[in-house]
Length: 526
Image (cartoon, rainbow, N blue to C red; front, side, top):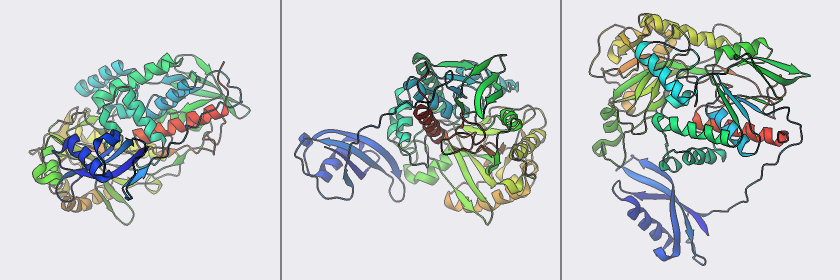
């Protein structure tokens, strides 16, 4: 018999022995009655004295009686539902466009079910991508096709590899288990806020791609969709930048939130887009020690808990200011994908052992701010502030940076005790000049509130780096109940770029859902 036990509490130094003692005490049995104990969730409770809270699964020997307790539940093992192929003929092989989380997991599930997908990615493979990103960070030489936004693994590869999500979907477990199978650390299977780290994630996505290829799939890098052809309302062909085409009647559009030229091409071809809200702002950096002390008090620095994170939000009448994509012990990365723009993001490696903590400090914006009813107006809105940031930073790929106190006072000063971790050049400038007033005003209003919630957040030397504009896609491509584009049968908008996800796990889940729909619809390719 398998059971789930929740709300088991241990000290920071308790370890496995204390946890097992808690389990046996809760069940009122001895160790001979337990076949195994497995941690399925570990979180940190900092409300009083810092401690760990666990949920575990156990398998007990036959005949053991379970005490009545709200924290103990018998696990009912349901038979796995088999995914059966549909009967619609597959014209060629399914085509997946993009190798971010959505495209990668979609292709993996298709390959695991014998559909041998063709996968194309406009950017390069990991090795090429690392080289070109490093060249941009060091020398300002941006490759507009292979960069932090485009290439093997998608934008998430050069971030923290966060695997937290707000969605409640059983497919999340598959996402975590597959990441683990291909090299992610054990802790992602049980930590409440799992992360892989960009250093490990790079290798994981390569192993996943190799598995797709082993199962008969084909992955083509530096290959961008430049046009599409349809027949009788159904997609029939995709043209690429390599002067070639791929004939297929099932295309997964997992292009990410920064494929602006592809959005524009699809719009010209009659694909419906709608404006979507997102958020813009800056990256804010503090010494990691300040965040650790604010969150953990005297326990800060304890080896069992690692660097602290935070999540803050402040609701106004029409807008919300909040922290986003917080990176403990991380760096701020140059993330542009177009010339003469500045875009920032945050990144941590698995150990999260750098000096600074950074997070996006952003404010919600929506269609009413875009200045046009054109479906792609949100893209131009992003471009406007990215170009202003480029100009504010000196028009030489330097990102504008500013002490928090100087930002609040509207003046240009120098650096303080917090040194910029940004991966390119920086220039002290007034960030008020490269964001709309309603965004900077909301940021300023939120600072004192956030400082009350997290002591030290409002420190004078906290450093702002502008601008963060790619929090999520500025568009959504409407889908029908079969997850197809409403304008073109067989075209499946997927993941964050299409407006249906907000992070690695939710994007991967959306890709899995689409793979399942394709399998249920189409027969196995011959």
